[in-house]
Image (tube, rainbow, N blue to C red; front, side, top):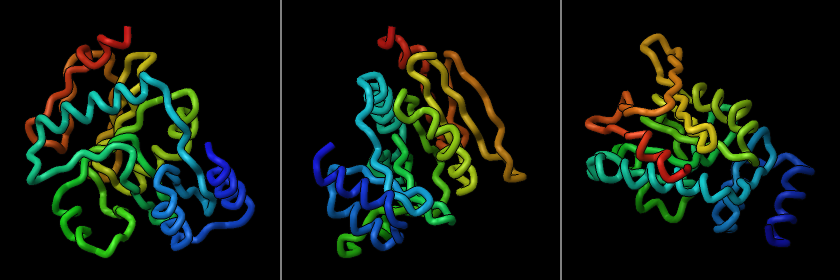
Length: 199
């Protein structure tokens, strides 16, 4: 963390930050990976090798299987806004091109989405695991994201929450095998292959 990061963090915790100010901070500090939670700036910490490996591996598999004219895979750089004024940076997010196209050529505005995403993924890490479970996952469900995954690289598990027609979520725990995202056509993820290199 740089001195500038420390200054932003301290300033952002002493006084409430507006959404407009947050967008300005996020655009000006390219390496900050800032989130906004209850009016406070929160910088995403640097993660472990296992964390980055899982996110990169999954992004590569999704990119191979998804139609690039319909979807784009974003890792740690797309902000999802919750109606309460929170902004989160998921580790991975699948964005429909129908939502991305209108944002292009908008004079350098921050990329932020209010609409539900077909898949949002957080990879568990020691520094963010508790925060993700207690804060981010309930908010993703509040947003109405269609499927939310938590991948735990040390326990070798994937927990999936899939939105149901009544607005609730069905939870499934996977310890291996093949996972098929409910809202992404023709996509399968082989968990045994993902976890093999993790030992």
